[in-house]
Length: 534
Image (cartoon, rainbow, N blue to C red):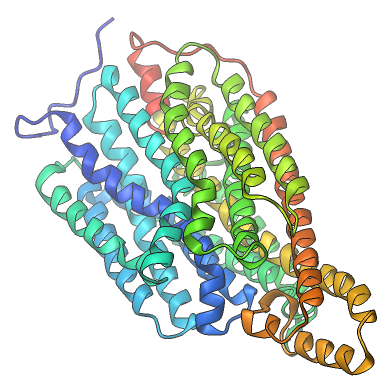
C-alpha cells in the first residue's frame, strides 16, 4: 500500500508544507480568541456605554451568529475560487472590522462591527482546514492537524486571559486593536507562503443560506431579548414567543430544503446517517455551548461580585489555559492508539464535575484559590476534547463526504456557541431579577423606613442585570453585600444549565461506536480524519 503524496498541482516553490502553518494558525488563533475575549470586558462595556447585560451580550452573539450561519457557504466559496484568495479576503475583513470595533462610539455600532467581524471569521475558517488537508501528505497531516487543534483549544481558553491583560492595561478597545498587528503579519505570511490550489465548480444554495440566516436570527433574538421584553410583546402584536416559534419553523424549512437538494445542499443530510458523525455533532455543539455558558457568567462574577480587576479576573483562568495547551497534543496522539470516544468521554466527564464544582463554590465571599483550582481541571478537560472529537466525528465517513462533514461539524459547533450565548444571557438576566431582590429584601427590612425608600429607589433606577458601581455606591454596605449574595446565587444557578448541556455531550460521546484508530498506512482513512479536524 502506497503512502498518500501531496498532489503535484500544489506548488510550494520548494518549501516544506509546514511553511503554510504560521499564516493559517495566526488567522485561526484570532478567530477563536475573539469567541471568548469579550467576556472579560463585559462589566467595562456596561460602564462605558451605559448598556444593559442583554445589549452587551449581543456583542458576543452578533459575532457568533454571522460566523456560524456563513460557514457552510464560505466553504463552497473556497472550493470555487480557491482557499488562498478567500482566506486572504477574510483576513482583510477581520482585521479592518477589528479596527472598527475598537473605534465604535456606541454599543449599537460595536454590535454591527462585531457582526461584520464574524463574516471575516467565517471566510477564513474553512480555508484553514482545506489548505492543510490538500497541502500535507497523509503521513504528516495528523501532526499538522494536531497543531491546528491545539491552537483552537488554547485560543478559546486564552481569550479571557489575554482580554483581561489588555483591558486592565490599555482599555477595552485593545481587545480588538490587538488583532491589527497580528492580522498584518498573518496577511504578509498568507500572500508570501500560501499556495494557489486548483478550484472546482460549485453551485450555491442561496435559498438554504437565507433560511439558515433568518431562522437562526429569529431564534437567537427571541432567546436573548426575551427578558428585556418580559417574554411578551416586542412590536405591536408580535411577541417573543412568536419570534422563537418562527425561528424554529424557518430552521425546520431549512432542513426540509436540504433534504430536497440531496448532495448539492449546504448541509447534506445523509451525513447524519453515520452514527458517530451525528453524535459527535451533538457533542461538539455541547462543548461550544459550555465554553460560552461558563465564561460569560463567571467573568462577570469575578469582577462584579469579587471586585477583581479585568487582569486579575483573567489570571484565574491562566493555569487552565496553560494546562489545556499541554494536554491537547497528548490527547491528539492518544486518539491514534485508543478509540477517540473514550478520550472525549473523559473530557466531558471532567467538565461535568468541574462546572458542578464551580456552581457550588461560587459565593460572595469566595477565595481566589477556590476558583483557580477547578479552572485548572477545566483546562485539562477541554484539552481532552478538541482533536479527539474531530477524529470521532469523521472516522466513519469516506473521502467523498469528509469535506462536507467538516463543514457541517464546524457549523453545528458554532451554532452551539450562538445558542449558548443567547440562552445564558436570558437565564442569567432572569435569575438576577429574582435573586437580587430576594437577597436584598431581608437586609433592607432592618433599615429605617427612610433608608429603605432610598435603597429601593437606587435599585429601581437600574434593572438587576445592569447594576453599576455608581448604583451600588448609593447603597449601605449591608445592602451591597446582599446584592453580591444574590448575584453570586444567580451565577451559580446559571452554571447548572451548562452542567446539563455537558451531561448531554457526555451521553452522546459514550453512545458512539468504539471505532479502532486508523494508521498512517491507510491513507484514505487518514484523509477522512484529517479533513474535519475540528
